[in-house]
Length: 89
Image (cartoon, rainbow, N blue to C red; front, side, top):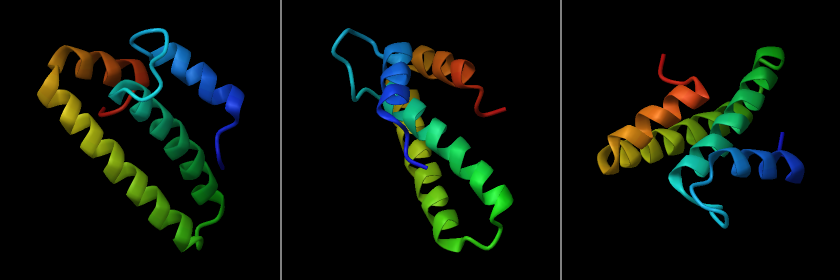
């Protein structure tokens, strides 16, 4: 379920704010969203995998906190990010 190094590089290059950016809110949220999507697919097949479900809920909580932080800092970056990732309906 872990992301490959190549996929991580693709996500970073899509969402980074400058050339050496690897840890901004946008990059972290994009990485978490990718992992959440993969784990959600896994849980559709393996309904009784409760330990992975707990991990999913922890990742969702972390992403929610990062999005809340970003929304408080810069609402335009927040809106652009959720539109790019297709989250929050």
